[in-house]
Image (cartoon, rainbow, N blue to C red):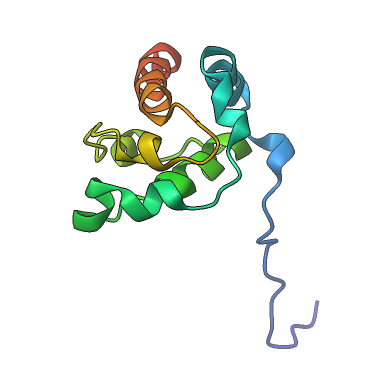
Length: 111
């Protein structure tokens, strides 16, 4: 076969149907207020850990709801559990409990 000097690159789109949604479903069941989030970014703006590291709770929330769990454990350990995010949330999402549930569910699903 003759080559023309180029190759076909693989798709870069994300197939959300292939992601494992068990983790997300467990989190929603244990802390249903997470579904109220409108991704306004107030939590990220006031995050103490976010000022000193690259921790972004809004990005973490988006990844979790998509079912993308790669690297979450390392990311979630940056949270200081200060509760500022919960105080400024306009929708009343219990973010501290969400973080704690993520910790517990990581232990549950990693085994």
